[in-house]
Image 1 (tube, rainbow, N blue to C red):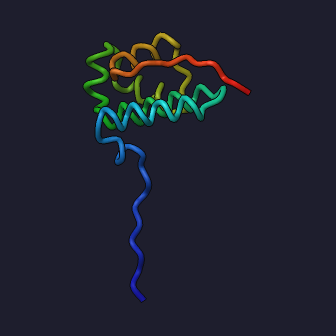
Image 2: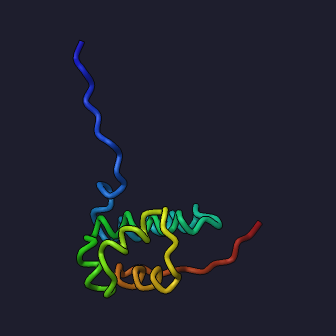
Length: 99
């Protein structure tokens, strides 16, 4: 019997265009609820897809610090999140939740 070869799933493999990344971020904002680590992890996925070294240059933050802050395990300051969002060319959106 032939063995099935599998590879680990990585969201980054599917974030190829700016539009893909923006739509992914929008979906994550909708799904995150009150979980800031979820948003940080989503930004980390987008940053890895775009290039963490370039993001470090664009934000003036250390690449290693960005990896930690955007891992979903870190606890980044809101100022860091805003720098990352701006450097990635993304925008936060506000809306009214209708229950």
